[in-house]
Length: 340
Length: 213
Image 1: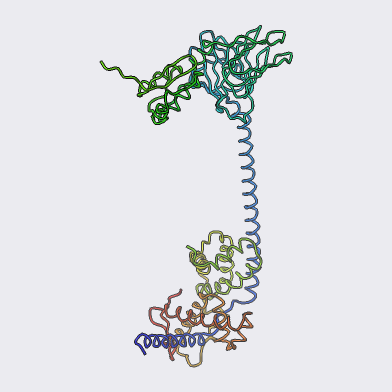
Image 2: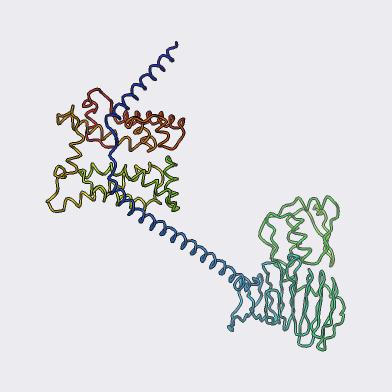
């Protein structure tokens, strides 16, 4: 037998001894004192009542808490719904560019617009002669207005142009979004993923399409579909007729109101694509190497607050690439360095 | 930390309003609490009854605060200690016309019945009573199915089969309960410093006198 086994056996024996001693004490001590039966019955009856009261109280508290949580959730939901229906929808666009004073009538009061400014449903905007305004909606719709103009943003997706010129760019908008519509006294103009300008006077409304597809419907129901580079007008008797295509100068005021172009961390290729699209230019590369270089170059710096053509020149100045800029196209090529 | 899952489960069932849990709670805790309170109110049965009702009522109203860090009985005993302090505070300001414990006929009768013929000397009797009380306290602090099994087997002298029938469980399970109960009792008594002796008076070490778990 090993020492360990001997120790174990000794321990077991000791434990059994102690157990026997404990049981001996237990026998001598006898049964525990039981509370008197009548006392037990009285206490039990009283406690049962206390316990039932407590259980009922807890159930009431739980029920009230659940009710309060339900009411709170309902109130929260109703508040969110109200905010969605009334407050969020009321904010239709924010002003991104403003030149000279522009007045807005809101809830019967006239106020001077400033940057930044949130336009809301129901705002009447008066852009005087020589002033201009650019605004951006949350969904990407961009609007530019040249004075003199008077318009009312009468619904989230609808602008009433009483007089003046408005340029609408919905090309960055979600394809499934509701159509954006410009109403004039003589015609209704609906975009189908496009950029167009609408110009309204008391006698006619003229629409020119820069990109995409527009449907123009006059007051007598006559309708016309316009595509890129086309223009048409509706006159007071409801007739719609074609006009000669808009020239390059037609879009100069629009380009002047283009939103600043952010460049920080973006590739030269991306930035040029945006600027070319904004100026309605075709972006081309002299060689695949030049295109690769444009994709490799990463730009840094503040947003370019310039018309798109000027911005193209400015951004290329900081690179080893250059561009030939014509009315329709920007051709990127290697910069030619002249030695003195 | 939750060291008393069984107690937590009982408390949860009580809070849910399960009638069976109330019966279990009362059957299990009232007698133990009564034995805890009785010696602390000078064996005044009426006061013990009142205090037990008050303490268990408070415990029931505070069940939601029980976290299972101590056993439920220890938690109830703590409430009882607080109530006892208040009880003695009140008693201090009451009329001096107090009924002494030895004047209570029930208590006197009980004390007389406890006296053993061979231990008729006052000191031996006191020590015997103290050991018995400590054994009972130890039993009260064991899981109650252990304590009940021990009482049935070793005090009432029932066979294992009879104990199994009383506890409504199989014989093998009862044997296992009894084995665990013996070890638990031994451990509790040892940790309290109590050892058996032929002469019961020597069973209590001096440091235990007056000590109550």
